[in-house]
Every structure is written in structure tokens, then in C-alpha cells.
Image (cartoon, rainbow, N blue to C red; front, side, top):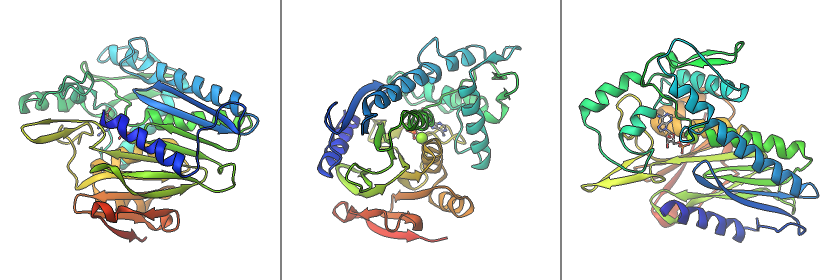
Length: 347
Ligand code: AMP
Ligand code: MG
């Protein structure tokens, strides 16, 4: 419910900030649909709006059928169903490249991101929404199955193999960003150059608004869905946010959320309430927001200092919101109402 409320608020802010949802025949096309377990909104301006928005939706729905592990016929489900068997599974190029990307980013980030987290997600009941706290013995038995470096990928043959029975891939951390990147390409190929994609906390801004100004996107206060940490001005960039507040359950006053630290099997407690990544690369933004939420503020900033291609807004449990210097002009901090203080991190 909270999730839908947040999405509603985000839309409201977009409306208030001038990114109104046009109807076909007005200044563009607005397409809203449910996919990948979330509400998706595609707004495309200009003459190519209608075909571009339809093509983007078709592409997202095609990718959901490929990447979902809850659809029994998806290719990810095929890969998971044959875990531990001798023969590798033939997969489409899109899935091969996403698996390769996720495995390589995981190695760069000391396994903070691990797409073979599925058995642990299931043990917590996050897959079915029948939540429960697994015993330590259960987690001890499952954690050896979480190791995406053992995922065998043969790009030439177009196959992959999970080497041990019980292993399974969950692309929840990266699928929406991957879909956003592909939808962006489809929209541009259709001839549109002004669009906004909202794929559940992955917001992709294509070009600028029809008024010529950058798109404006709110970053939610992770502790109060009525408030914002601030507003980002985006042009040809995606902003992706991960936080424990998005999906969680509570037991005996303790909150258990859906982003798992692969080294413990428990929800990550790294000192962060949320991580927002801004990048021209939608897939990178989605993958890094999840990974750096697990990694924590120090490792996140170290990684940012080492690598190019993205900027960060970190919301710490200590009430400090830190934006990296590339966002100094693009991010308008508004977190005072939520009691936050603001800092800029420099290289
Ligand atoms: P996001 O909303 O992009 O931050 O992704 C969160 C989702 O990624 C969860 O709902 C799980 O499906 C999956 N997930 C949770 N923890 C991890 C992790 N450490 N590495 C990779 N995927 C994860
Ligand atoms: Mg993610």
C-alpha cells in the first residue's frame, strides 16, 4: 500500500512540477501499465509519441516474460529449473548480456550485489509475500548457494548454467533498469527525443521537457512518504533509488526489508536508509543503487571516487544526506523538513 502511495505522490509532484501527463493528440502520449511487479508510466512527447510509447511498452513486456522468475515459462525460470544439471541452458542474447553484466559488477563490488540471492529471498518469504524470519540454520544451509561467480556463462554458445542444485537467479535488482535502457533505445529509434519513463523507482529522462527545461524528479524521504529529500533536474539520465522502506515486514517491532546482504543472509544494515544513483546508463543506475545500499556509505563513496559514469545521493541513518559533487547544481535539497542535514562529497 505504502508503495502505491509513494508512486501516487511521485506522480503528483511530477504533475505539480509541470511534467503533466498528456493524452494522445495533446502534446504527447501517456501510457500506464503494470509490469515487473510495479506500476510503469511512459510519457512521450512529439509527433512520434504514440508509436514510441507503444513500442516501449511492448519492449518492457517482452523483457518481463524473459527475466521474471515468477513466470514459469520465462528463460530465467528455465535456467533456475535446470540448476545442478550437467547441460547448460540456451538463453537469448539479452539475458546472457544481463547475466554477464551482473556477475562482473558483483566482482567489482565484493559481492554486495549477487543475483543468485533467490534462495535467501525465498527463505524470507519476499517472493510470495508470506513473510517469515528464517532460522540461522536455514540461512547457513542456503548461503553457500549464493555465489554468482560460479554462474557459468558461454556467450558464444548462448548458454548459461547454475552449477549446484538449489541455486537460482533473481534479477529484481537489475531487471527494471535493463528494461528502462531498452525502452529508452526503442523510444529514440522511433524518432522521439522528449520522454519520461517511470519504471518503479527507476526514472529515465529522455531529452528535455517540451518547454526546453530539464525533467524534474523528486527523491523521496525514506522515513516519510509525504516528504522529499529534494528534487533532481535530469536530462538524458536515469535516477534509480533503493531503500529498505520500499518492501518490508515487521515482527516484534523489528523491520525486515527486501535488500539482503549476501554475506549474512540478513537485510542489509549498512548505515543507509536509501541510495539514489544518477547515470546516463539506466542499467548501471539500477544495479548500483541496490549494490551500494548493501555496501554502505564509505564503500559507496570509495567506489564513486574510483569509477566514473554515475553520481550519488546517500541518505544516512545519521540524518545526513550526501550528494556527490556532480549533482551540486542538479539536486535541490529539501530535506530540512524531515530533519536532515546536507553535504556534498568531493573527489
Ligand atoms: P532494487 O529495488 O533495485 O533495489 O532491488 C531489490 C531487489 O533485488 C529485491 O527485491 C530482490 O529481488 C533483489 N535483491 C535483494 N538483495 C540483493 C542483493 N544483495 N543482490 C542482488 N539482488 C538483490
Ligand atoms: Mg536496483
